[in-house]
Length: 139
Image (cartoon, rainbow, N blue to C red; front, side, top):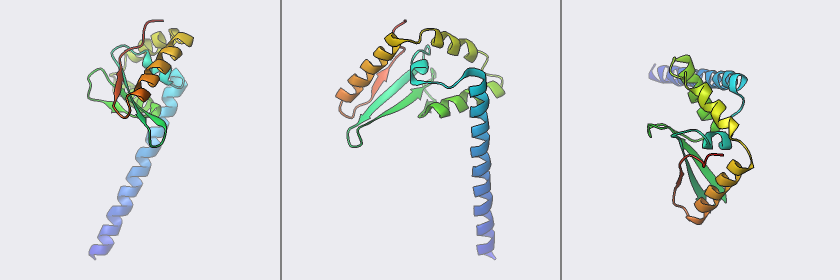
């Protein structure tokens, strides 16, 4: 009896995770239809947001995290950020996002890309220590 109950709980949990993953993908799709796909260069231009870089020498890759102005929310991928923003919009707390994203897109260009690449170079030179990028220089 207990084994059957345990199996049902596992199946229920699996279905719940699948439903949550599907809902996340829908939110990301809705966000992208409204605002387009975010890029590291767009996020780098968000006021009061921080980009945390860590170069992992073992795999020769850069780990990127995005930190909200509150400092509490750390998102590790751009889709995580898109999902977070769409959730804010759906809960009525994302009124500021359209203006923030549009203003950041205005400053896109070679100067911002070069500034981000310089931050990445610094992170790589830090040899395994986190490098926090504040907002990029205004372009």
